[in-house]
Image (tube, rainbow, N blue to C red; front, top):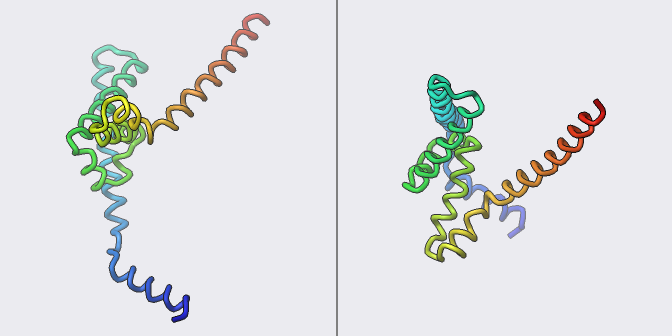
Length: 154
């Protein structure tokens, strides 16, 4: 059998066995679930502002609550079900980031708290943290250098 013919037969087999993905339905679900998460964040922000907090503290409270809620839902194995339903819509950066830290921690809990949870918790999120922390240090140093120069020049 010719390799080209073998590939063709295999491709036909794969096409027959794999289901077609409902792209419009998936996009719609991602859109409304992501919008719902953002709406929940906006409601929390509005409540904080009504209580007298400034915008910075209100945004911090929203971040903390969304991280806590998504970590809690991951612990209950509900966030994964939401993710299967909504796809990328549930992975708005802050909620997806919390999920990416909590999921490996839960999965490797049986290996112990140090080598299991501590070692595997940052396998997915670790590079993001390293990049974010390193970049913020570099930007902070650059800001410090330029802000002190402008003060001494005045």
